[in-house]
Length: 293
Image (cartoon, rainbow, N blue to C red):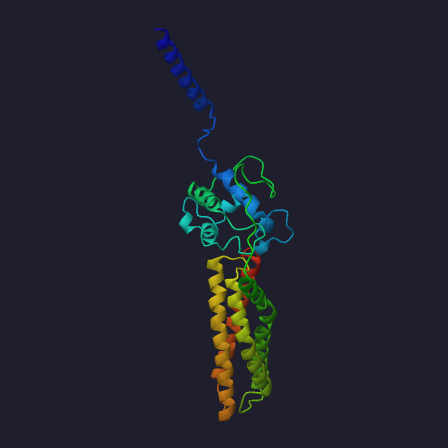
């Protein structure tokens, strides 16, 4: 009888404690805190490039520790849909963090924390934000920084040359268009030497510009968003081909001793393509919010 009383008292005590916990809204220790987990990952692996204390965060994206702001950005997070969220796609493809990140790559646990957070609706947290230098959880050794191979470092360095040469074809195409407008008043029989010179030089410059642009994108430079990256990459390739065709057409007119109106049309379209490529390239380098008031 006494044993029955002890068992009954224990069951009653457990039931009472559970009821009080439910009534007071006490958290269930077995329930994962997705917000805390993902914030710890962001602080340890992402804040060094996208943290709030940086003067010039990469890609003008410096609020990685503000989970609410990240979750409200539809360009990166689609709540409860990881497979449609740009943030998860970048993480899943190992594009972010990049291969040469000083904090090292994400572990499988880090990736799962990000996926689970988005799948849970990207909840916010009310606790104090962790510091970017927060230590890893107990029992988990710190990840060693990943060292990129010599080939990767070489390609990444070559890709940076894209920023040095891309201005030449832009300026030369604009100069060729202006030169054609000025010479149109004189109505020469062939394209003017100035227009031919600018187009030939633009054709020479556009080849390394496009090649270095592909290397620049493949190395993970820029913002690193695939949806934003595809537009300037393919638009730039199209523009390069158009510049080459325009230069070849101008040379054909000179050899034939003619001056067709089609060259002016091709120049006008070429300037438009160059301007569009430069615009999207700027958004890629500085972020979509670059022109925000």
